[in-house]
Picture 1 (tube, rainbow, N blue to C red):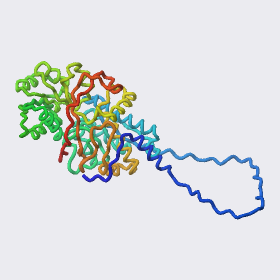
Picture 2: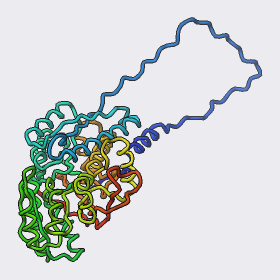
Picture 3: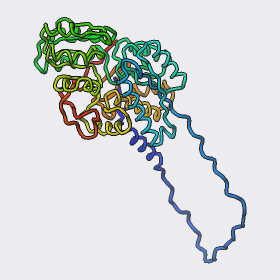
Picture 4: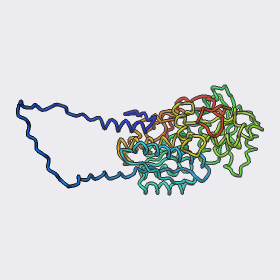
Length: 431
């Protein structure tokens, strides 16, 4: 994909300040007019006295706010993910407004709860569009993403997916839907296979959820592992909690003897799967791009040295750690997950687009496609294919370690991460 320009936004606040400074660098003509030679003293005229008040100046009219929508689960299955997205977006809005806003206009975040429901998600996306938002960010589930993606194309208002990996969210004609953190499901088995090959594994076990994301990831494993030399046995398809007993599924994986359990296809079951695997099949478990504090909070010491997961955030970078300190001072959350990093980045990119092309959603979408972004805390450059798939995704793969965590970046405990690998650039999925 051709990129006309590459913009670096490690801090949009700083970037906007530079823009403002550049606009103030005017020049003044200092050439003096020739003065005729004279010896006469200049005539002095006394200024007339007046009692009139000085003319009043009218302050400029305040600009209408730039509205950005948030559509994420706040009360259902993916609430911990959604609260991180929300607070990441809120932080970016606060920081940009504190620096003067976008060309003097304040940002306004309008929030809607998708409730992990396709019908509710589409209805609330329409409400946000009716409210005049320039873009909507935060969609987490495949259920909501698969329904709202086509609507974004119809209404021509940019939609940012955070953890909605369903292939159904995009078609080759998509121009207003953008993935930001989790790549499409067909891309997500590649980094798992890369790690398995690096470790010399010859056999792994796979468990997926019985819903669109799980089915998509299952298909990805079947296609990606074919001919790799790593056997994945019988893929276990398990129902979604709350009333799910994972025991027979984990026992079946143990009987097949895999050297790792791949649970990336079952986000809601991650904690239960790790807990049972400690008793039934003591090997590492790959998670499903889950907030690490959520997993560790439920598992405690069981997670250390056993739970591995992927992230679009680079927890080891100075950029992430600086952003995380600001986030923790701002949010009630105790850890800044990659969902929050994505939320912050969404607002950052939309604000940059509005600075460049104004607040027309169509122009904003065109600007996003034409540029790439280096965002605070991200593990890779943000750019897209013509249809909105991540073009340069390189997720990092980590294991929970005993720590200690760097100072000021983890209020959920002293645990931290061991870097296992960073994915090679993923080949973008073509719908």
